[in-house]
Length: 131
Length: 119
Image (cartoon, rainbow over all chains, first blue to last red; front, side, top):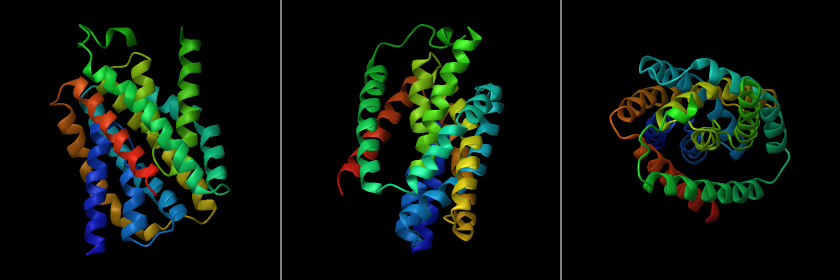
């Protein structure tokens, strides 16, 4: 039963990831921690491994829809590496509760900005500024 | 302004990478809103985020692996439903207005924040 629920959460996490362009770790981590007996740190690490092939599939689908210049993504990915190292090292050193609260605060600020955008009048040409 | 663009990509990438390593997520929760603020439309922002996540998550998973935190069997169990789900999500996204993606993203962040604040 727990395994079935974990699989269901993974399916849902993948769908959220494809819909919103995120990794889905928000759902993979609890699936691993709650239903598969991972510690918080194990769940985070294992979630990352699940995300890799899932993001490959999502990118492939988006390329077919013509929505992405993969070079942009790869450039961001390569430039991210110093951040990745810092993040992993800190995750292995700090108490998780402090990180959770900081992340929650940032989430609320970003959510408020997106909410404002989502409720605003549509731009006539939303892609124009990006070119 | 290619240099300026690279600097912005670097700032977004480093922030996303740190979040990814810290929280076991892809970092899209940071990248998508920032790419939208850079002027990307929702579909382009989310698609670019997913492609960056491939590199970010691979690096973060490898490093966590060195610490001995990765459980391979559990990853194998979840990877098939996760990959099936992402196909569904991308397909649905092509059929809804871009602004709806922003609203759903905001909803996701509120849910995440609420869940994290309540112990």
